[in-house]
Image (tube, rainbow, N blue to C red; front, top):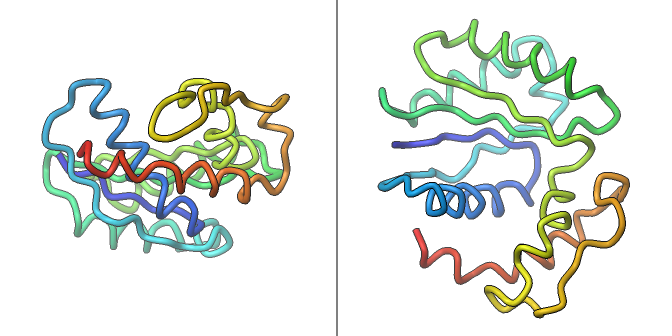
Length: 159
């Protein structure tokens, strides 16, 4: 199975494949293939025709058993409104390809901060690693998360 992805930032380009491989391993999904995510700035994705063009390009990377994952930050938008609107546009553009749209409720990097406890003592992280406060309320969390992502090189070998 191939999952092609569309993301908005450089951090997601680096981190999303590792996250998908980890989830596939934990769910015992064999043979997952995750091409390097396509980076499309959020403003271009949400503009008229933007997600449609991106999904069309990503569809070239997947076969019948694959799909497309669009991942972006909700920032100050309501994810429950923006997500379904983008999903409807993506599916209308390519009804022949499975697609999903996932919006982080502020920033994708907050997910790594929230997952700190699950990473404690693994992949070179300190055993006492813990998430600070409410990760969803941390703005500009890219620097903290980037440090966490850099500690994940061992996951590459787990593919």
